[in-house]
Amino acid sequence: MPSGMRLRTMTLVACIAAAAATATTTRPAFATETPPANVAAARRHFEKARAYYGQGEYREAISELEAAHALDPTAKDLIFNLGVVHERLADIDEALKWFRLYTTMNLTPQERDRADAYIRRLEGAKKELEAKQAAQQQQALAQQQAQAGGSNAQPPPPAPPPERPAHGRIDGFTITAASVSVAALAFGSVMGVKALRDNPSGTPVTGPGQKYPTYTALVNQHDTAQAEAMVSDIGFGAAALFAGVTAYLYFGRTRDPSPPPATGSTSVSVAPLTGGGAVFVQRSF
Image 1 (cartoon, rainbow, N blue to C red):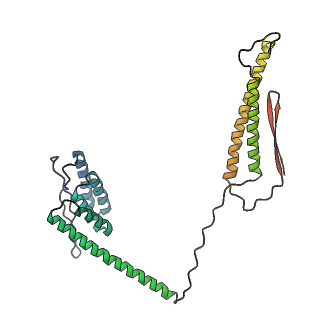
Image 2 (cartoon, rainbow, N blue to C red):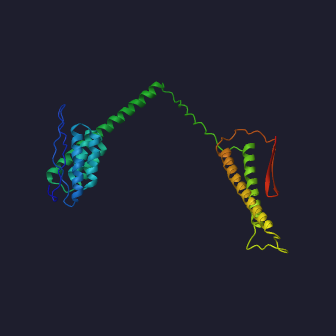
Image 3 (cartoon, rainbow, N blue to C red):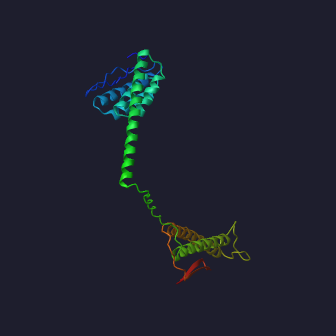
């Protein structure tokens, strides 16, 4: 097909008479400025739309026609066909939208007359449908009033939805976990500072009158600092672990409607020991 020619889309003109309906198709016409790649892709969508339409699958035909229209928005026959298929589905508002868009394009007198006829017919059908729906609503309202026997009693208001339980429980477990996390953090910090202080810095010198009289003393001091650093890391890890436990105990559980009064107490203490330290947690009930 020459690149300067446009594909002709199926007209899908519905000629409804009695119980029969027919649709005529022509090759889709696309604007000359449409890139050839878009023309080829649009034709593929058009062929699929024609097949769907012939099988009565109008929703699928609309999808393919919209894809073709996206590739060439200036193809007026595509726009007209979209209006025709929407009319087949009784989508009056959608059909009017496409037909009105069609009338804004460069049309021949015959094409404009045909579009105006579609629009007049659909607008009339829309008014008739709206009038029918309004009459049905009035009839339903009248029936409701008749069933109520003319009573002015208002229906009871709907029951409010149940309140969702609030999260954020603070009890002995939450307090204990938080206390352990804080104590472990403090313990890790203390041991970290101690490790930095005890670690031999610079270039240590051993010998009589020096800070480290023997090489063995220097090695022992270095090992002590390493052990303190390891204990500090354990303290920080425990702090992070119990912080996660605290978050779960607080946010992962619902708040008690009436929490019992706290009768116990929790005490946490930190004690440095030779080559390490200890954390003491005491809970009374």
